[in-house]
Length: 286
Figure 1 (cartoon, rainbow, N blue to C red):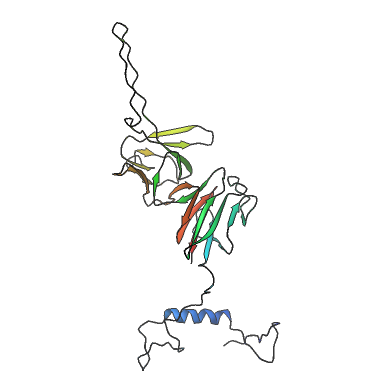
Figure 2: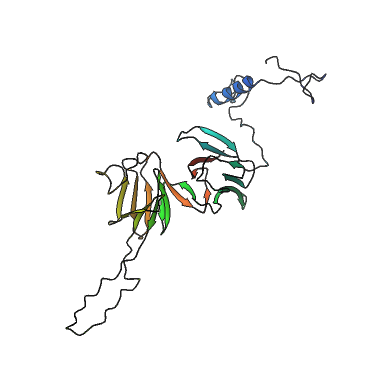
């Protein structure tokens, strides 16, 4: 044991004499406990370590609080970043006010989104909620069901999935013949014509028609039918397809920068990533 300082209630040497364990000693104790093989036994057949502790000893954990959650801010696409322990709920993120203020990002609303801890039937979980922000809240998704007007982020641009109905074919009038009435196809007879629409800052839209039940999206025209000229898009970035139940799904194709889905609220699991403005976050439960 190091020559720690004897400490009492006022942090000074007291007659009872308490020697504080140094940070290095605590770290060594943790490392020793983690590195001891579980099969190690003493002469009596009991599990033991050189310090006499059982290798099954668990680390201290409070019993009267829900599992801890950690929020990490990522800088410029790097995995490292600033970590924040979520000790309060709701936890608000915004550009002007909130528990976390990101004032340099003009795409973030004054109060943009919040993380809320919920308890249902003794189960604790966290929910991400958009606070009616202008530019939306997006979560990174491996697979997502697409609905009309659903917005997504791919690379550095925003897209909208849109379904339209085919107009009835124009009637060819022959004035020399008797005019016949032509029924307009009912909504049940009309085929949905989905498309992916790039939404630009200027309001100008670029539309990519989905002419088949499977469309690959990426930067390489040899591999993808929708080619995006964006250095943040992978060669084969995502797959947009219709399943057997006639639902449209978007699947990330193990791309570097992922596929991001705009949400109003969503339950977060043990690990998740989300983006507001140009700021990306990781969330995890310990």
